[in-house]
Length: 428
Image (cartoon, rainbow, N blue to C red; front, side):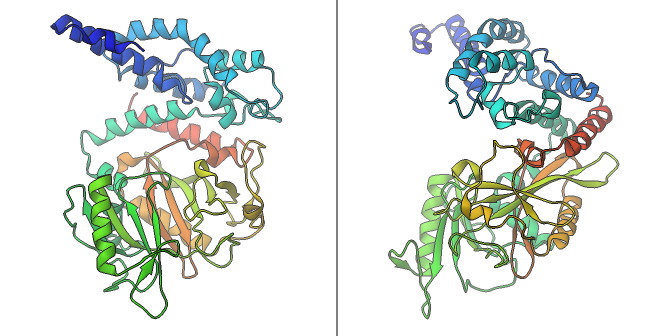
């Protein structure tokens, strides 16, 4: 994109053109790299709830752009979308297309208003194929939830900060008597120490320590420091051993680099589960929502299992996904062929998560402590020997894996009803 060519002038008109052009580039091109349309067009669906939800989503997306830009962006999208679709289709491998022809995938993308990569991620190309009515497109969901929460919050942002900062989330858990790994110290982006909370009343760490950024995602920047036997020292990857004071200095430097960092107790996974190595920490994500009536309901759950040589678990970092039966907590293989799981993760199929019912009760209690405008959250849990502990809560979507892994649209039907109730409640 030749944005630099607009920088030669310095007048207000040139500056305005540059701003509009940059916004169009961002909206039309950059947001289409694996996510979907930023300005949603009419899409094929026979489900009345889906039509209403997608209309509200499209309106939420359009509202983000200046009114003068919207018509131009819509026109540009109608012209460029077929080209972007074909570019995306050509980037898919034969395996990702599940034997489908490129023309078929391109036609489905155009008529369903899904990017090619979303068709792959949502299982719409694998047999048995998931129809478009059985899929909630991730970008639409994000925009819809942003709009719903904005309408509910009325400008209040305190809870948003708690969700986006893991150290503040640890404080939230301690204040509400929710089980959470002990927090030994946290520093902000200026290197200043935040008020420490000893969630379990421990004066000092007596086991492994996790050093991690306070605001990162997908396991980035996390370090595991293992306690050495018979000494107040911790080492990483069998390297140099550090005292706790040296770890504090290291965390403070990480905070200056990453905008915040924390030292936290390692939540040790229950031995009921098979682990490729003893340091692994599989997490279970449960999407819990609050209806406009105040009732809480779990809409889907799945396990993130770490890669063989990994400590933390995330699917995008080479990990595996396993389904979780809501009624029993028994792990099962994902039913659509599009979700991978390795041989190590497969050894957990058929095993039951310990303290599963206790975990659901804990989540309902946690959901009741958050503001109503949270609407739906993805809670990450580690199931330990002594019970479930909360790691974090997530606004981020997609929620798609939570119901796609089950190979059924039953959860989706309830989720569509859930969105419809909130759209009606807020008159969107």
